[in-house]
Length: 250
Image (cartoon, one colour):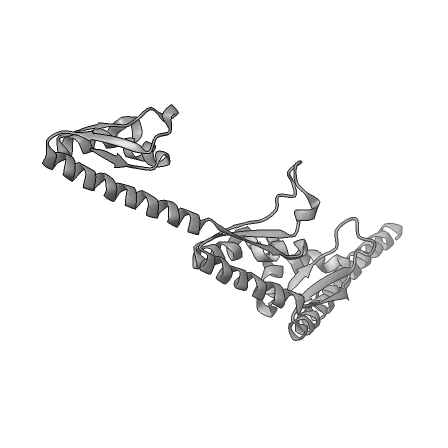
């Protein structure tokens, strides 16, 4: 009996090194002839006792139905949705060590790709493009989650605060622990100047307006406290040097 099986499914019927088709032939005690791939035929011939051929035909058709469903599901899972999001927001959407984007991926069961600006083949026109891949409903839900993050970021304000560069290291703390604690406490982002910045004292605080104001006041209070320690230390050092010189003069 001839059974219609789409040519593109033959390799799944055959299985790895012919294992799947051999198992079917043994299970139903039939011979299954699959045409050479160069013929691209949709017909598979099943030979044997009539009842065995019938059971093998049913098994083949059931397997074809499963494979078609799998292909359809794969196509649905590969729905792609693109978002144009300013590249400056990408690090925040990704989060520290990818924590934020990993949560969105797991929550909505999608894959999310960001443009690779490090690649030599990267296209500057696509630097803002985020691609979400998954079931359409899941992709749209993930898009909403990202849009909410972007909306929150756009509503934030940035304030520059002049803080004596001599206290920056104390504000940052060992391995950044102190400044991370402040950022978590006030729900803000704090950026210190780099060596290339013209003013080494300018610190940028970003977040919701109320949180930024509170963080700014906290940083200025810390600066005042730390400067007192520095000034006292410098005064003591200066006094000891002057006193030592006076003693040498005597």
